[in-house]
Amino acid sequence: MRAWMARRRGPVNAPAAFLDRDGTLNRNRHGVYITRPEQIKLYARVPAALRLLAKKGYRLIVLSNQSGIGRGYMTEAASLAINLKLVALLRGEGIALDAIYFCPHTPEARCACRKPAPGLLEEALADRRLDLRRSFVAGDKGSDLRLARRAGLKGYLVMTGAGRAAAAAEKHAAFRDLLALARAVPDLKDKELK
Image (cartoon, rainbow, N blue to C red; front, side):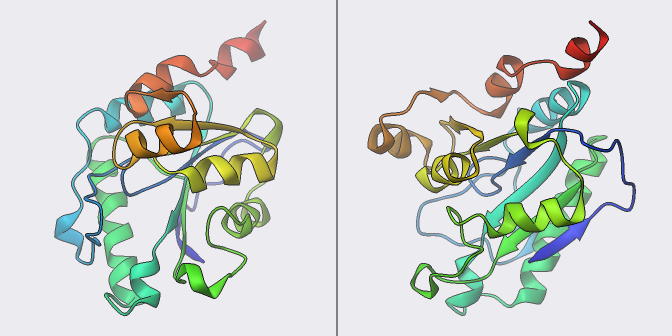
């Protein structure tokens, strides 16, 4: 389900950084749902990471499981307000997200949009013409890595949020945080110039 999308269209067939929200962009405590906009607190290095990813040629698209809605901890309207707060915080840092998509269902619903299912990614593709071949998924959970595998994309794990537990469970290398990842991914604009 789309929570927010920028009006600007940007370049056609640009690659995307499909980013998890809680635990990747903003602080998240295990078992505690963010249910109010004032609870959104960005990790300190996230603005620099997102600026660098955008500079390298990636569209910034957030894909987030929000089972707190399905569990009755918040309404869809509250979730929208939280996502709009994220957009505003990042805009205040000079960063323009391209879109935010979220799944409101619980894991038991077995829906097509809850990560690792590809529904949110497919919705993003329906809204924007993206170059999946050069895109990637980044997050702090195994579901982010499994989404990447299902979609045939590179998947990167960050050690923020639940990243340490996911790295151990998935036996997957992880980056310290999103900025370390942003420094490591290819600069697509340089490649296009060559």
